[in-house]
Image (cartoon, rainbow, N blue to C red; front, side):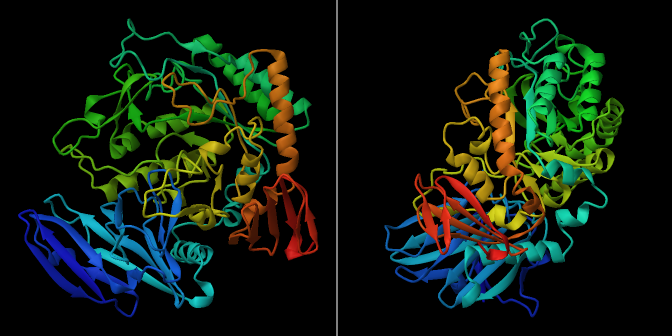
Length: 579
């Protein structure tokens, strides 16, 4: 049983009793609610409560817009409450000694916050749907899944949600997609190597740029130097890699979007870029491009004010002040009809053959567009974003984006970082993070685990490579990952650079050492992760759907596990669970 607690803008409160049907779905119908005047609706149930001292936990899918999932243990603690607005997976769960219940928010998945708290030793967890006085966009629906006591771990909950998505055709396994997307096999076999080629100051000192006041462009990696990087990889024996050109377009990284042309002259122009693409393919590598039709800058010729996404008050929705100045969010429906086909045709003509990268799409909560000429709900904005990703996938063989919001998961092939920070600051209601997203989507998506694991090959913390392998990541190596000037080194200060031949060769040697370790595990990209278990503070066991296990030893000394002796700071693969 659930209680729907309806709160009006004027403070009036009404409660209605709801129960799950035979299909396990709890529904509060849209047509049973008034069209205006409601502030919020809470769906509460005794099922999602516990007492302090009881065995078990609540599962919070994302503690902020970074994908890190967390557990709330039912321990003694002071009263506290947190509301989580950015739920990149529309799920939550309770696990107790008697079993577990997973709830999937099927109706209005973008309009709720998840409330977790404890008062007087009583724990509670519930979704609060936010109306702001406006009409509901859909029925409110929760689908419930019960798991037995023998399967109540966070791993079992992740497997349950994965099955839910696969059985409904919302996602498809990588293995299945190989038939129509053969480049996925090649991409999975080696690292993603991003090369930031040119950029302007970020954040921009000029909000509204023109041809006259545009800040200077730093052309760091011309196409000829990028070709030398590719050739160094080949000479070092890195047989598989996918290169992605960032900032190849006019005015560099985010310099003039949605404009792409002319290819930035300071890098050598279109002819030299074509030579780079041809040479990369000749050496057997994949090569892709980075673009971003999510936002636009007034500097661009293809920027049209009527394409902007408007807020409820009629003002344009703003992004950051990035390379091109003040970024304006674009309506995904308008973009789909005005820019996308042109971009895919251009990129195909250049000869790119890798997983194309569309920035931003999968890392933000879908926002409505309130322009009366092309209005969209959040659900409709999400649908047009999916259509855009799928159009690039169909046109170029594969598509990637930045984050792990799972409304995009069925339309993506690669995620740059589904988790922003491996160790985010947790609110008082949360006790520890768990890799819930990675357990759900491994075998469905390729990904690098987190921002922290970018350039793990050259970072001094050797545990970062282990963490990427523990959670099923594909190495991500990034030339000039650290480029902003405001102190936000979100990809780390330790970087791949090519200022000198010595620096380039040193970086390539590090990537080669990383590649040699990764290639022994690369085939596991096409298996599901069935179980993740922290055996101790320094030892983790990961079990795959083919029966293989990984034992990850974070200790700086040998560790014994069963009949295995694990080297320090190592990943050991046991095929079919054997030695």
